[in-house]
Image (cartoon, rainbow, N blue to C red; front, side):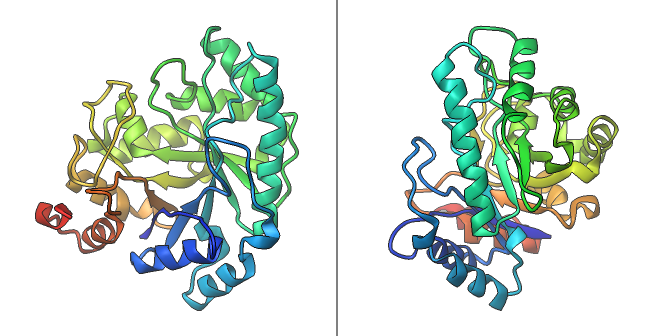
Length: 287
């Protein structure tokens, strides 16, 4: 299995520091933001120590497709109400795509967005329109994330993502990031993960599943709230998440942990070790 986690990117080492942090947890992959997810402030790529990070990954047998980039939250491709939001979604997404290309990463995870005060159909059509305005280079794939369905979110059913993917001009440049917390909150039964994969394959196609966010959930299945829990401390549970992690049908897909800090400390080294060993010990999470 390929296990990674969300890591920080900050001065002075930037991406090099991100890779060092991931390796310190025993991770085989990592996920970063190229800047703060809440705003448009970005450091030039030339300052991010990209080649040093790439060299360190190579020395540890990690190809650059194990560095996943997450798009900032302020990009909302589903919003058709505010023109300034629509313009920002297109222009800033194009900027982020270019940054992923320059870094040499391969996958940009993107939330499909929320339609706010319109309706689901309008939101889906707006996403298709907005994404068709950006140009995605051949070495980058945008992975639309499965959502929990809270509020007016789009993308909490596989069918919704299938419609979006089917309407895109650059279909080959798009895929899906499956979040276990989100799809459980959306109502999918992860106790039968192979059935979920079969449904995904039938509606979208497993070849388009490129990233998995491996998270437990604080909510009961179908609550549509989106609150991540640490591995084994939520309603999905360790055994199910471990079976997802070792499932041979997704063995080549990076599984990224986005679990909460415990007592202001990252739990990733413990969670990764437990998933690799297949043994859950709640006392180890008492940081």
